[in-house]
Length: 65
Image (cartoon, rainbow, N blue to C red; front, top):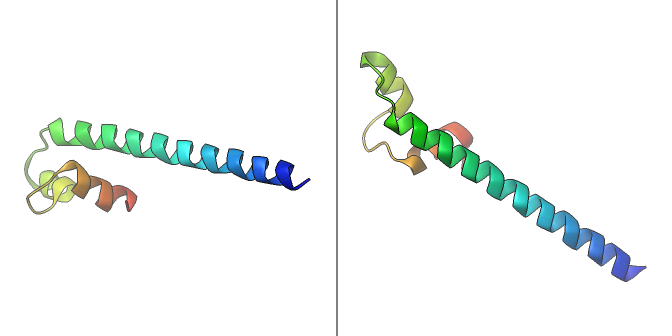
């Protein structure tokens, strides 16, 4: 019984970590796409904010990472 519970917990943990990794990779891809895009004038300030505007800054601001 205890082994079944521990196995279930392990599977749930692996699934959760896998989902987190997938979300982080997706967020990184979209952030890289945002960086490569030229946004004119005021919209650029809204997207990137104050320089530097790296992948980490966008992920923190947009996704709370």
